Amino acid sequence: MRQIFVSSSDIRGGRAFLSGPAHHHLVRVLRVQPGEVLRLVDERGRRYRASILNVGPGEAQAELTGEEPAEEEAGFTRLCVCVPKGGIFEEILDGATQLGIDEIVPLVSERTIPRWKGGDVEPKMRRWRSVLVSASQQCNRSRVPQLLAPLPLEGIGEVIGKDPCLWSFERAPVPLHLELARLGTGLERATLVVGPEGGFTDEEAGWGAARGARLVSLGPRILRTPLACFHLVSALSTWRNLRPFSEEA
Ligand code: SAM
Image (cartoon, rainbow, N blue to C red):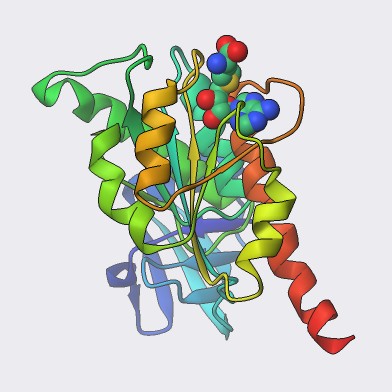
């Protein structure tokens, strides 16, 4: 079923009154017609089934026909990734959203090429948020991942000491699967770190390790930044999904 994000204030008296971006998405992207059934999700993650009543030039109305249970949380995953140049970061936002990431922290490390000053980053952040919203709608997520403003690498010093942190580093001697096994079953929250096109310096990786990050290898080949992100996120989610089976055995 197709899904759109709405504001809880659009929902009144058993109906949804959809204007602004929700109306635009309904009309221009989904081209909905009266009678069509959709899922509406509000900012608190409440999910409604709704049938379109009418589609006007500035507003559409839908009748709510039921509420669906909230999406289950499988754990919390934060992805801290050095921003690559061009549109590649958007690919990462899109793919990581589909794979279920909860929070994205854009980083600026020594070899990160894009840099921003003052308000320069605001238009980027708006564009990045819109990518997260459309990816979430497309893959039927109830919650759009949180996006933080870009931070210098040192800005994640605290988080990597708090939640278990898997930091991908091509010269790490320990493979990812071994670190996941070492972390064991209590992996509700996790932070993943991925470097820029030019990689992390040894000093940066050493700085992370000194704060509790676990440096992990993703294998003998060098992966581009997006693929390194997707590999880490998928491996973590596979590990979490395997847990109930190993606990049952
Ligand atoms: N320094 C590298 C080079 O030019 O040889 C490239 C870095 S790679 C394109 C971008 C990031 O992906 C790295 O900083 C690292 O975080 C992650 N990465 C890629 N391949 C990896 C691997 N085999 N093991 C661990 N991390 C990897």
